[in-house]
Image (cartoon, rainbow, N blue to C red; front, side):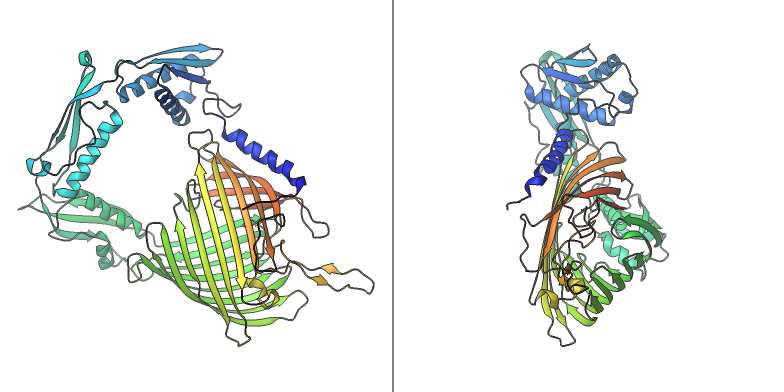
Length: 605
């Protein structure tokens, strides 16, 4: 894919990218005025670059999180504290005779590290019941390996996992003892499994329920009487109860064993199932807006959720009701139904609509979801300079989504690909038939080892409508570009094809209409996100996009570009976003503003 920009834009784009690069490449050891008061430092380890880089990374991580270091003003105090840290880190890697010397020159600290000999495992013993030892694959260590703390503790986890999968022990307790022999630069390592009876599950009881259906929750437990007891399975059952979003707290109790059987009791605290929401927002192109909502997350006792929401601003007013039924005939499947009434008053059209629809979504794998549904939309659409038209559009949306991101509202790594195919048929018999196709891809990459945890975020969107001519498609179903979720810097739906309007007076030149929408859409967004503290962050971004009358999305010189910066305040739920964007090409006579402002909850994408 080649991306073309007008020559006058290259200098601006270069400045933006340079700023992103300059901020992101600053090493954590370098202090920035007004942001970091800790002195610069260097670590030198002779003939071991890997150890040197690891120690530097660990010290950088400590500087990000240590409140003790931030209280020191004298570089000597910082050096003494970090020297102790470096000595502990050396021992954790098996260097028990390591030495660290620090010097402070002109406010900069130099740590000279002499690791000494690497201590290795001389003997390794695992003490567990003989009938369990036969198939045990080992702890991942062997005699002669370095005595590294991380790998030693990993051995404990491997033993616990093995016993959880192959034994019915009432309690799984594993510890270890490492005896260091300084004269031999070696150590004896012993893992011990504490004695415990093997038992099976008896009765399973749920206490504290008032409105949630008990049978529904029992199916979530996946604990059957007579099955092999395993505390990991009990903990997993507690987690599944919490994930229903119906339970606020779960305590589990296991009885004393009787004849090799234990009873399990879950004491539950139901969550408040009702929520009322109020919200406000602002964008330059839609003005101020308010929203209100109510939801009940247990309307029928099995986790069914009903939500009613209204949104009002100067351009659009809507009232929507949605019902969500989780685990619809299958644990990995859900059903949703919605009804929405809306009124839009855009510059190029006005539309009133009532939409009814249903959708079944199935999570095929952890990252892949398929959905299929149907939707019936009754609408009255009036375009600029045209008579209003009525539609009864029946559609059958098909979609697939692949999502590997780590956070829905503030992703820092991973990617998403969403593809939707939506055929439309007008039940009025007007012959209006078309297919609306959209593809959205996002990607996120975070460099946690750099200062401010810079995240590079990319979004690409393309759309095509096929089947009929552009003006035969209802105006509210065409593609438009511009606005907070598209090309920031330009007004909402300000980009795309326009029509020539006849002159108002004889002899006057013809004028351009407002954007009429198109059969194709191209959008691309690039963001550099930075976190200055746990609660504050910033963003530099570049957006490009356009809509086209012909069904051919293009990523070339026809794109319009906007650039801007923003502030993020990290709440416990999602980032609060404040963005200011500027168009890179203000078009004469089309009302492009010098800037646009956007305030909302969650990242732009």
